[in-house]
Image (cartoon, one colour):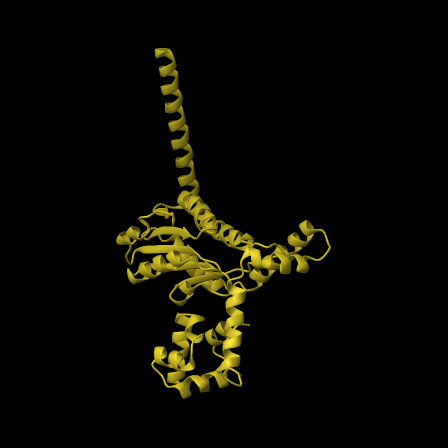
Length: 293
């Protein structure tokens, strides 16, 4: 369990000043705690003794020991494929890597299923099925494929769904259309992408609802998201896995279909009819062009 996990829970009893320090640390985790104790106290607007009491309550003998664990959290968060090639290869052992990874991913799916909370998931479904709200999907360099795939499915089930390409120079311009009738779905995993984080922050300032897909270390977006879906990403590969995140998206789509099968069946039938009509018109145009030549 990381320091962030401990601070995000309710196990440690804190004073109002200590809670203020915790909010500062979680708001800029773990960077806020990596400087001097005086600097941390100044940013939090509390005294140095308050910070030291907080560290003691967390079970540390001093600020240096506290910082050591913070740094280890950073190392685990920011591991790159290059840094994980040797360590994960060693973890894979000598067994067939194909079979080992399949078992590893199956374990991750079971772990995520065990953490399922029906009330939270139903609230998320309520939000995504509300057609009065426009829905936008966005992801990072590797997770944008998740956002794009969810957009493709959702747009078949309901109107008003859009995909945002993060590579666009006009990315932040999109926020001009955001308001309290907007839902932003964000995929952000460790090595968190600064432009995605800032886009979500601006969306929240515009009163949009935020749905976040992230890992157990929690994207900074988790500090202001309305709904958070966490998935394991560690595998025996040098690259983090998004298999569980894909499965979470599949579960959302399947659940939305189950909620309104007749309405969605009618929408899908209309889509198929439009496709046939469009293809027929294209074919007719091609035939007429051939006759002209």
